[in-house]
Length: 190
Image (cartoon, rainbow, N blue to C red; front, side, top):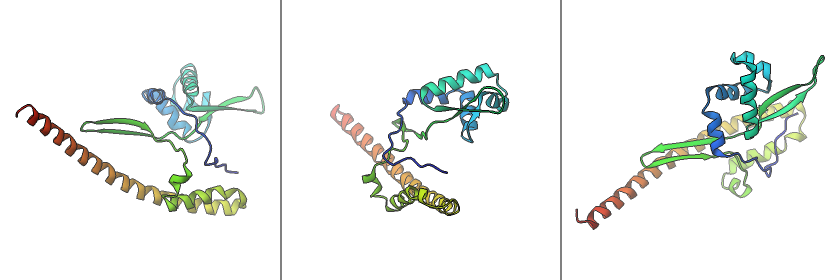
């Protein structure tokens, strides 16, 4: 059965510098790529990436300590339980680089019901997600496929609007900086 967190769930806050440090290493990025497909245990990661288990264990511990990964023990037929590593939560970073602009921010989802009201389609989709637990398995799958398509459409619309806003922000910022420079130059007699 699928689980969707309550919209009021508090997300674990990770330090931005820790996240960037994690992403600054090729092996850790490869591990995250692999784990984005599903949880794995140490020897799986080691074999898939062709990296020694000791190195993989160190990378996994570091990412677990930073809050990027979570662990779960799973019993196997013979031997002791295996520790599986998986991505702990969605983390979305946005990097902006431009003329007089450098910003890296965490834009991971923090749900705000008041904000959702300004996006009626998204508010409707969110309500549908919360109702999934009341459906049969077959109906839930049909509804999930429909919701997925609606979310893709909403994302495309919002991405387009965001690109337009970012473009205008850059244009207005350049004009402000130009006006400030002209004023400074005129103040010193140029």
